[in-house]
Amino acid sequence: CLRGAIRISRAIENTLCLGLALVALGQVRLLQAQAAEGAERARFLRRARAEVARALGFAHLYTEPRAAGRLVLAQVALLEGSLSTAWQEATLAFEEARASDLALLQGRASRVRGAILAAQEDFEQADQHFEQALQMCRSHHMELERARTLHLYAEALLLRCVGASGSAMAHYQRGLNYLQEARVVYAQCHAALDSRQVELALRQAPSKRPFLGWF
Image (cartoon, rainbow, N blue to C red; front, side, top):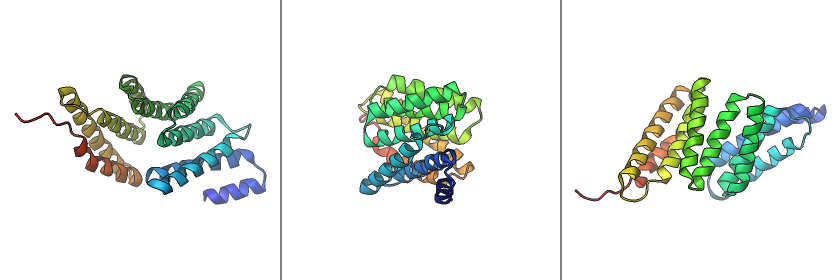
């Protein structure tokens, strides 16, 4: 369907529709990359970036697909380890979404910024952005987005489960609870790909459990 929309938009020279379709295709490529590994993941990331970059080149692209496209670029950069680029794109997306009162994209941008900060090990600031995203999701009853935020927040919490301390165990348990809550919502929303990813995270979680010693 997306390929068909792109062909028709090109044929009639409708850059607005073409931009929308390219951003949507970039989002699909990002999802494919998140589910892949190694060279295949890198290939999908390159394709996601290329599709969105073409869309953002259209001068009259609406604010919503422009901000959504920037979020794709931010997540591509995050997966590639280019954290400064990821932060720049996510912040631009957040500012554009806030200026146009786009609650869904504000929440997504806050979630992505939280993930970037967690990757930088700035956990205090990461928590603030994740909580901001969760509040936005709750206020606007965006359950699937809330589950995705819980999922990513959980991954960030599990990153800090190092050392033999009570705080490490608290982070582990909280992360595990968030993964389990996200799993329930994914099932309710019939989000199959998200469900597969959270099941994988739950299987991997025990390896991150802090060892507090023998008592």
